[in-house]
Length: 329
Image 1 (cartoon, rainbow, N blue to C red):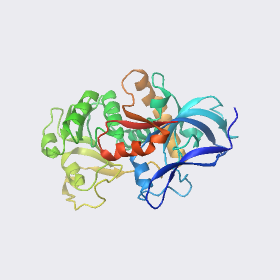
Image 2 (tube, one colour):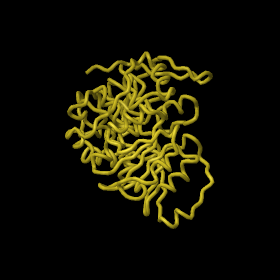
Image 3 (tube, rainbow, N blue to C red):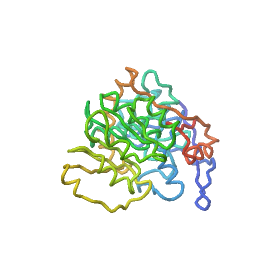
Image 4 (cartoon, helix red, strand yellow):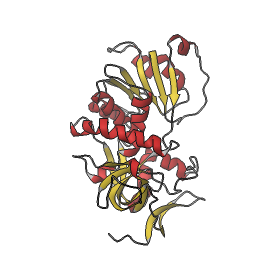
């Protein structure tokens, strides 16, 4: 397969943060990488933060936006054995996903699941890696336990709701409108609380499936931290993946002691290729069968073309989306 000498990328103006299409030299895959002709890329909140200078990429990452793609492999590195040219994959990128060609570590690629279109598969990697690592590897959620995810209508939230329900957990969530709450309950949440109109701590204090939340996934932070502590069950696990409303909070740690709580956090992008490979292997072994059984699929809010990238970001910034936003090439 002939690969062109240049690729098209989304370029960010550092002065006004506007985006435009530009060209640059085609990257070559390193020994353990593959080059992908991109069909679609997922839009994620870290993309917006990086665009506005709030989330600098790691020093070894591509400065081009984009953390997840789907497409066809058109070249492989010398040490790659699993994949071959022509394979269709979805991949977690180290940046560079907003482009018509991009490189990705071979161990961060996954096959396109049966029953999922190649366009919709672009919505899988970032959310699946994040949810699997934080809810199941760190949070150790088990069947029969109570699980609360904030931001239930987001890409992370819609994925977490489906996967947690699929393994037999009792799922609860918060969201910002009645419509979003209805969407979360349709996905399997027992109860979704509109946090704009209700005190979610009071609304979730007495639940029919036992006392307290065994695992809480929080991307909000700020005053939610103390609220999470109040809602946590004995031996509960609270996992933070972002702090959208603030990194600082004044906390009463007495309930942490009395309830033997575990409070942990992680960010996906800073983890090593080896750690991400471990997550990918577990996803393929344990989450992919749930897709095949019809218990989970990416919920797509909207699809834009590459040239409509600004509209795609505006859609995410509006906060009106339910599920994932994707751009096609």
